[in-house]
Length: 432
Image (cartoon, rainbow, N blue to C red; front, side, top):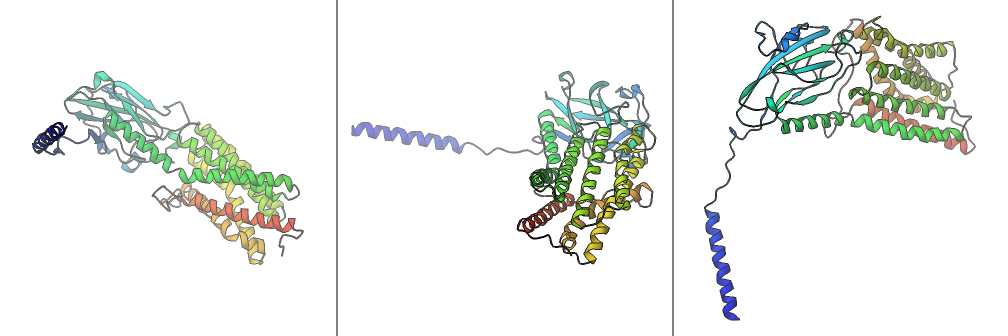
């Protein structure tokens, strides 16, 4: 037994010695940045560009040497083609190394649509072309056909873009304004596309949270309104919150190009009408402001907002003018709310003093935004069309609108709970 154990020990030591000797001959892997780089190239740079439309421009043998060069990471509005709408073509080439590999091209978002040609053959498309008033804004990855994926070789890329003329004075044309483009290994391009979509959704986290909060609080207050039917402020506040939630949901559909834009604009106008009418009704009750002729006139102006979309649908005006009309129709409602609230606050009305700060925040941002839209469309200023900036960019994008909206919801909710408690206890809301 002892001999057997001794033999096993010797065998084990011998095996360990052999392993150590073998390991001593191994070397750590050498990582080479020349040969070990990922097979992805940014397409940011100079592309050939030409306005107009000609099917021959998709031909890889077409001589485009006389075409001007535009940067692909800037829209054409910034490069000498301001307010241009219609067809335009981009052309460039991509050289790939030798080796068997599946290649893909990733194109950043643009307005409003395009068709992709690789070596003269259609390779994909996105968005509307010519016969649609809709617009699409989303990046896309296109896998090249297996027959065109061997190397080394040069790919000839042609992109036929369409920018709806009605949008030309309102949104930038071409690639580059919303993101970069790439060419490379299909697996890596798919990862970039997934990352871009994640970042897109990341930018909507704050609005999504605000929409959920508006829906939940709105439903709770709506239920409460059935128990206090004589106190209509609960009903109007619930309708205001639910309309805001629907409006944010529409913005998601617009970003993802799920709903035709004229339909989105009409429904959005209707929802904004409902939200502002509910806000005016709510404040007229809690601030005891009579519904005078001025109140009804301002409310009637809201009816202009939804049909304003037809001004550009039927080519009566540009999108910018239609937007101006829609904005002018809702601005008086915002002014009425703010002026009434400030007037009551100066009179030392306790309810007005409680509501003053959250309401100024809630209506102040859209008020400034509306003023910027109006002055932009009238040509009085050219530095900003919308007032947008991020309060935070990490760990997610946080915009002021949802933040002040959330503050408004909680402030008004506490205000209504206090009001409900006082009246339930047999008291009265503190009137001046």
